[in-house]
Image (cartoon, rainbow, N blue to C red; front, side, top):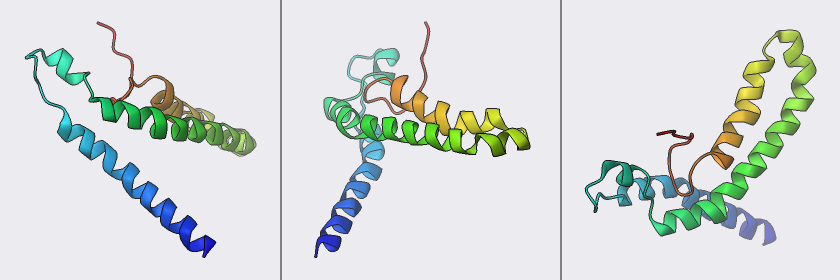
Length: 112
């Protein structure tokens, strides 16, 4: 019975996480007329979901990526693709976790 409950909870959480970006993208509307404000003005519930669900998972993915990168380092060094492995295992999840604004769907730091 415990296995069934754990599986059901994991399935419900995964389904909810997969639905968040689509719901957050539809919910953004231009109320001020300023396109810059519209692009970077996520709703409060998408910020809360990002803070409580997405960021901890992305930080965990970054930590797991660091461990996987260190374990695979001898093999990637022999293959000559250390940069690609570091980019995909460490930099991309870290960028999503630490550089993306709270509640935004796109990553990166924009300098005006």
